[in-house]
Length: 100
Image (tube, rainbow, N blue to C red; front, side, top):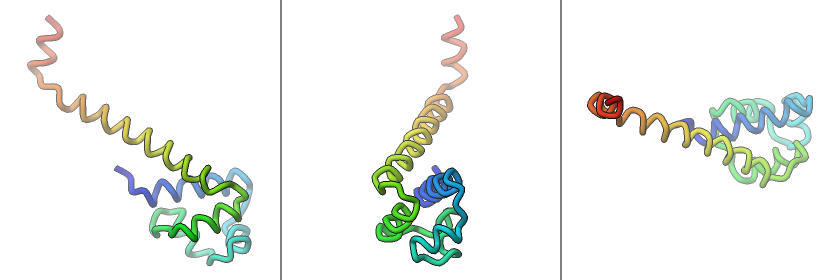
């Protein structure tokens, strides 16, 4: 499973890029170092709730929307993992019995 910090980073980067903003733009608005934002976007640093709020404000998006986007990505990932788990639990005997 992908770490939650990576999903948060993906959402933040996608939001920033969709608005045509650079890391420097967001850094100035959020008053957070450019390097730290870059590490958060790459999933290397865990963002605190205060940092997430500052980044969401800098991106002019409600924090709740950022978290909903992260939740949606997590839901898709969990569903894919559940499907893989159900497929991997099928034994060769199950396949031959259902083909008969």
